Amino acid sequence: MSEVANHRSEQPRLIRAASPTSPRATASSEYGANHQPVSDTSIGPYIGQKAIPAFWSASTYFNGDIMQTSFRNAMVIAALGVGIAPIVHAQDAYVARWQSVIGIIQASNVVGTGTGAVTGAPGPWSAQGGHVVVDLARGKVEFTVRGLVLAGGNSIGNTGAVDQVKGTLVCDTNGSASAGNSVLVDTPLVALDDDGDARFQGSMTIPAVCAAEPDIAFLIRTASGRWIGNAAVLR
Image 1 (spheres, rainbow, N blue to C red):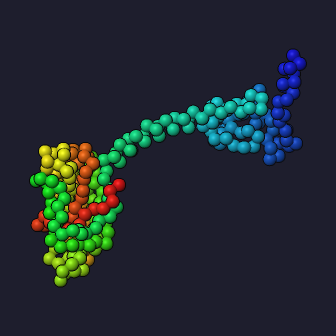
Image 2: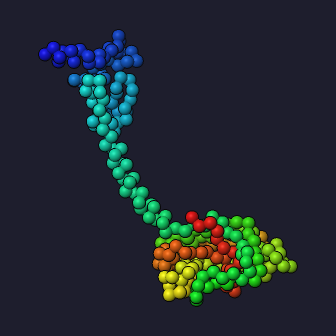
């Protein structure tokens, strides 16, 4: 009995206000029986004068000097987040992003294999930049190229006779999964203006091999089929 009495004597004492208008509310307004905090549904329960978020109130209580709190709602949110994350990552796994676009450096360079081989232009081109994003699962394609111009010959610094380009996705560049033939997916032709700028955004059918094989490239081609630029730095 003495141990119980000592334990009770050590319980925190509540400071009662001198008047009801004091900044501190009286103990009877703050706490119920057995020093249980009384919940205010608008702003949550009080511990002293500190407001506690309402979602804590279900399992917040005092046991001597120890406050035990269960963050059940927080755990539910965390669990949902864990479930959503793999879905997001799974979707990102099928999106190919290239950070820039550059012009062809080596004349007549060949990208791809067999019937899917694409030959480059006979002379070099340069570009100021661009980007390419291909959603391989949904068939969404977007590319932008800036300042794509000839980098040699008498027409150096401009687009020469080229006024249209298309984007070409070269899937399975080594042909290992397609009987020795790369798979090509072309966008429609779009205008290449005098500044060497072109852009496209649209949808197309993308074969499954494009997502299954890691060897993939994106080219900028002329209407005749020669490639003059390529997407660079795949992420």
